[in-house]
Length: 251
Image 1 (cartoon, rainbow, N blue to C red):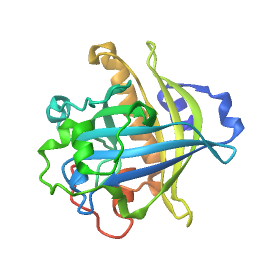
Image 2 (cartoon, one colour):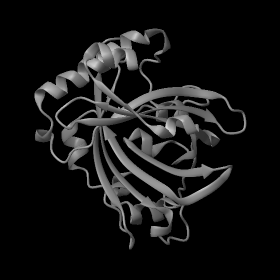
Image 3 (cartoon, rainbow, N blue to C red):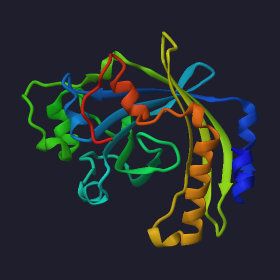
């Protein structure tokens, strides 16, 4: 990563936390037995952070609609019907192409995040409850007794190491990290991921020169680690395929 950054003229600011070792988080995905959420481009997950082997903080609920068409992702209202606080994010996620190295494809996700303490629903696994909390799910056809459960019975342990910030110029800084996803218990490796992200309020806030530099860095990095790439997958998709062929999705 340092080598590619230097070749492309991208600055790098190391995170002091990198020397302290990785962070540990537990992630579970919830869906109906026939994966109705994922088949309709919805993702529902819970994430818990661990410190010295103990769970800490408020478990985080993430509900997202992820789709390759920006207009569809933008139009869907993911706001929850809860009394507490929540955050809404919109992301354009770049991934390598499905069948070759050296390009990228985009997935757009409309996300809602909140702490589990911000909602007080008693039966959190029934679709009736989820319909009330997330009105966007009301369009799914399902029986009144349907419930959600752990996707493929899998609990993911995420080992996350913050690396620092990439400097693309003009104030465009991207924090970057590397993560390993593995199953808790068996410690079966699922996928490793290097990721970087830039946050901004408007598309217009990022100049064309910086956009081109981001693409140049991303494509060159792919070529540098070509033998390590798993094309055509996402971390979420790996969990849905734990027991073989997964459901049809929009990813």
